Amino acid sequence: MSVNALPPLHRKPTQHRPLSGGLTHNTTLLTRDDGSLWVCKRSLSRNQSGLETEAYAYTLLTSTRFAQPVELHQSENGQQTLLRPYIEGTNMADWTALNLEQVIRLLKQIHQISAPRHGKVSAPTGLTLNPANHLTAVWRYFRSRTTERAKLSKLYHSLHPVLQAHQPCFEKLSIFTLNHGDFHPGNLILTPVQQLTPIDWERGHFGDPAFDLALLNWHGNGPIVDQAIQTRAIALYSENPAEQTRLKKRVTCWSLLRLFNDYLYLTHNKLKVEKLARFESEFTQHLNGVLSTAE
Image 1 (tube, rainbow, N blue to C red):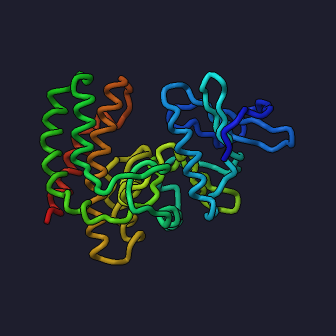
Image 2: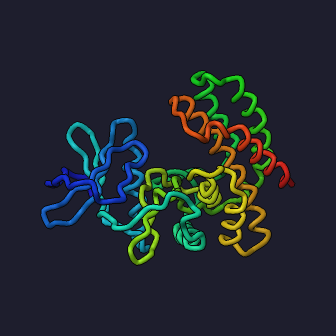
Image 3: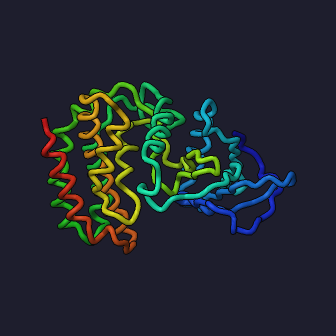
């Protein structure tokens, strides 16, 4: 990884796929003077830390087959640009189009990288994960910014005590794994030799492996709460029945938190998507699931 002036690059036609724009960045396909193709991600001034996170995450992956010679460049006006080699391959529309065993093997490889604290990939400092506190922080930020304050306030007050009751599940964690943080089919490339390669590490962090597992319920056109996929994923991740039970509880907690966050974000930004119509039923189904597994 380097931080310096951007080298000469030339725009290429964008029929090459897949290209992913990431969370808050503009992405193009460029070629260097030696003819090699590179993905170029430029910050859009809203959030530059994602590019720094992605660049640092790749330094943690140097001993894995996911390693990429990433470069981070910064202009005089502060704009950042991240470069990585273009990976030939295809993206799938949803989890059902992928081999779930292969997906979980990939995830377990990523999670072999660990730290004694959780937080930013560059400097993890936390000792105890607390989803209930995270929920409160998010709600405090959004509650005066949402047009659905009454409904969401009711849901917040139903979720917060549940997360608090499950806090002992998180206090038992003493080793935190490298999480991709935005794990969905669009961020996985299936290469011509049928290898899965993860891209877009802007949300990478050290945390609970159950967080990445929770994301298996998140993307695609089907329902968010796909218990069959989630149950099978947990069984593939661990053969230990006791560990499977612990993972299921934490996965459900993270799913509820992510569902609440996602709804706040979508409504705050006035984004109309199909999952909004299913929000309350999905939320209730997940909430009932975590209550049924309470100790």
